[in-house]
Image 1 (cartoon, protein in one colour):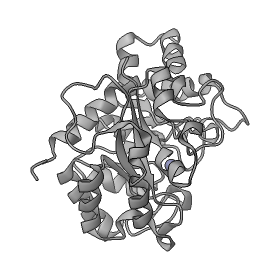
Image 2 (image 1 turned 180 degrees about the vertical axis):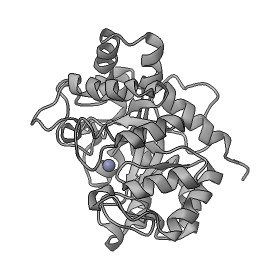
Image 3 (image 1 turned 120 degrees about the vertical axis):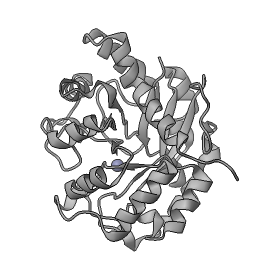
Image 4 (image 1 turned 90 degrees about the horizontal axis):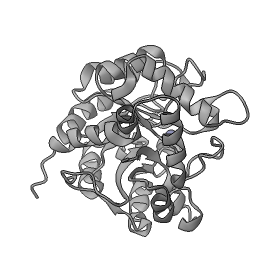
Length: 306
Ligand SMILES: [Zn+2]
């Protein structure tokens, strides 16, 4: 079964100097678990606008060949590739420095598929959920949505505040993606989504990648596969079969569900979903089908004429 993940911080961990063999995502672990695809984030939001986000993104991108995994920075193949592969995203719109040319630069260099408009700080685009629900996107953010629509780049609402979320719903053709967020009703932290947001994502046929970070799954100190299932169930029950997926946050988290500790572990989650009573067809959508469909939709909007 094709299995895909919408968010990991492996390129950031590599840039920090970590040894690839020690990371949660690498080719060997992907092959061990039959993992199809990871979305590798250029995590550039850690210092807000006070840092060197653009250069950090460029430096992280320079680490991509060290992954030893085929990365699709141009057109996706018609059929899902057999072996492990990846695509690239941005986490932290600071990387654009409020300059639209930077969007086109990252698009050309990395074929960026989605951008988490903020991390946990205010930036040129908008405000994070961590600082409250308002205000909405800034003028540059609103202009950015139009350009992202043209390039088939999704707005990733994980980390973004509510007002920003609704601005995306109102002003963008492409549906919102929450690459690594859970259901706030089950675990009330700013990084998770309210029911109204989940419903809007379902209505727009967007995407929600379930985050494996213990603190976003439960208020308890430890988590397990049952916690992941609870979040999936709750979104599925709202009609989420076509928007659910996995957003591991691997290589960016320090606590995870028992038995779900790296890229080789996805089969355990898939087995749990099947044993839990989901049909093969539903699991196949959640495991990767939904994310692939969205990536292909974005890809179809792109012009690859050089
Ligand atoms: Zn994140």
